[in-house]
Image 1 (cartoon, rainbow, N blue to C red):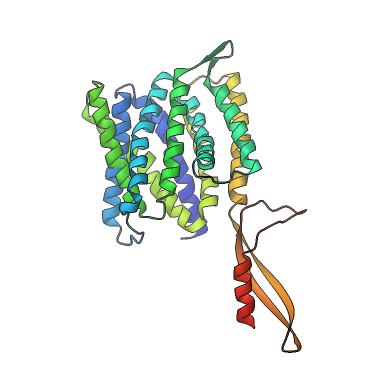
Image 2 (tube, rainbow, N blue to C red):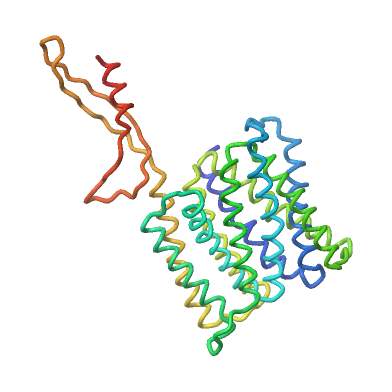
Length: 342
């Protein structure tokens, strides 16, 4: 795949997901929030299931018993998250929900640090602070009120669930993408459907069922499909960087299509969120680059001097500056290369 096509796929993945919040907000006038969550995930599962039948080049390893715990965690969290999101949309605005979706970055990073002991860089900590400040501003009911809005709290609960879910999915991300998305869609969708019936929600008119399923296929299923295709060519870091525009597209669509009110506090939160997201993008790109270096070693062997030149590449987990470029070498690998040269 060409680089231009891969970038197009990444941007389309972001745009398709961004459609989700304003479109769901509109459909919630006709569909209950839990029923809506169920239909969205069922649409994703069914749609990607059809695509998997048409794709004859599936090469990823299938899930097995070792993945069961993470799969179950992923499904349970994917039942809760969209329900919280739809409740947030029912009580709040689409524009707020779009931007608050970025709090998922904070949740994912904190959970990765606390539970999975992954490192968090100083740049990402700064981004976490900015995104958190922006989320707090977006969560107030108004400038003259110190109460948090129910809508914002539900959306934040959804991002926390997706933060845990991201870490579960990461553990099985090397396995079949089709299989992961289908399991997410079908089982999480049916789980939410059962809850919607328990709550007493009814099945809406057929036209709204079809629209919700199509929205789920595009906003969840097709978005993930295009994201993975782009990632195969661009790599995870660059794809994530392009995908970071999704919340801002969703906010723009909310103002254009739903005519939501643009407040001063929203503009302030918007600017803070942009800066925070920019730091996330920089941190993501900084952690995922590879350098090729040539090392020359001179030593005495059999009474004569020998010089060996070794070229090797290694991944870095830091940001490169002109002043300092510290990195770690795998000493054992270098020693193996030296012995080989001898």
